[in-house]
Length: 144
Image (tube, rainbow, N blue to C red; front, side, top):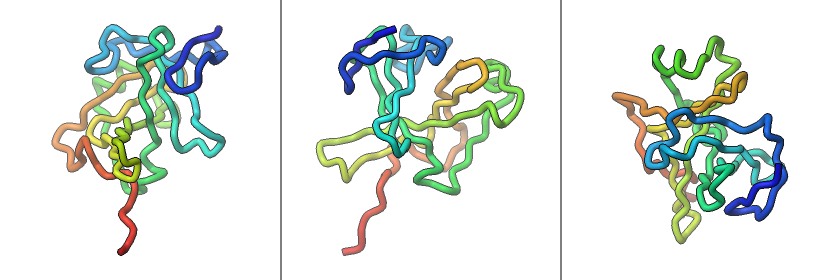
């Protein structure tokens, strides 16, 4: 299947890798199907691209590449909703915001995207009573 994308132009994707978000992503509730595309070989930055809407795409990262002590507590309700039975089925991504100056990138650690790798179901959850914020600096400031 060939889709139009925001960052890559036309891309051929494997339909079996489409991730279905039953409730969409907050503010994009009607957009249910996405594909995860790596930006480069290093697999640090990904694009969570809508399959049907080229202009809807999120830059995401796996948090542990930047925050080794990041912790996600997924509720029983969310585990059940995504049919997650074991930890190995869970992939976690966080949405990145890139302002005019890329050195000022932030990441939303409060609302990770959870994907069940077995059935390719996804959901953005909100970590209740979390110490994490929605605009956490992604890159460490260099010493002056």
